[in-house]
Structures are given as C-alpha cells and as structure tokens.
Image 1: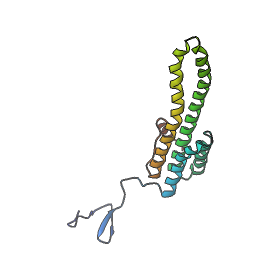
Image 2: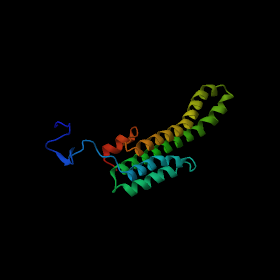
Image 3: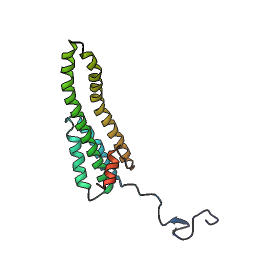
Image 4: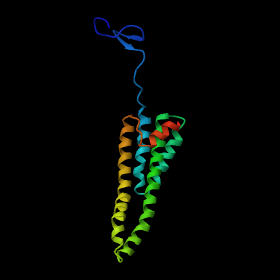
Length: 168
C-alpha cells in the first residue's frame, strides 16, 4: 500500500490513480438471465398447484435441457428442482394411496372399536399428506429467491446427490 492507501505491487493494474487487483478472490455472480432462469426452474413448482403436480417438473426439465450445455449454474439449479419436485410428487402419491387404503379400514373397524387404535395413525398420515405439498412449495419458493439473488441453492439430500454425481 502506498501513502494514499491504494493497493500496489504485483498482481495489480493501474486505473488512473487507483490500483485494482488483477484477480477477484470471489466467484462471479451468475449473470441476470442465468439467475432468472434458475429462479424460474425452482418457481415452476407453483405450476404444480393447478396441474396436479405435472407442469412444475416439466418446466424444470425443459429449462435443464435448454441450459445443460450453456450454463452450469442454471443446469444444476434446474436439475435439483426437477428431482425435488418429482420426489415430492411421488411421495404425495404414495401417501394418497396409503390414505385411500387406511381411511376405509379405519372407518370400518371403528364399529369394532379397533378402529380407535388406527385413527391416530390415519389422522397423522392425513396431516402429513396435506402438509408435505405445502412445505415443498414453500421450500421451492425459498430456493427461487436464493437462485434469483445468485446464491447457489442446494436442496437437502438432492443438492448433494447432484453435486457428487457431477450431474448438470
């Protein structure tokens, strides 16, 4: 540093009186279009509401296919979103099938009082089946906000899987 507190020395280039480092120690933020597309991939989960869960993963898949060779950031975010949305869709489907079996059995066995034992299990299963899609949507909205701000978002378990496998 010189007497004016400007950095000097090797690895700097002059800009008028200022000396700027030749390298920036932080990774560059994704460009605005990349951030928008990554946020759109995550936010596409909102399309699952009116389409029974099908449009969200489809949009995320299209974004991933369009950007897998153009932008690592967008491809990674879109693939994570796609996998997460499909996992939520499958889990909710399985819970739905379980409920379709559990409620008739529980109601039928209420006559024999044994249904009282099954009732708490069936109610918890119902609450879980209703809460999971809402929690999944809130999680993807949070992911969309993070991606739009240029922060790479990693879904729990899914993000590590995508990163470790090198998929994007």
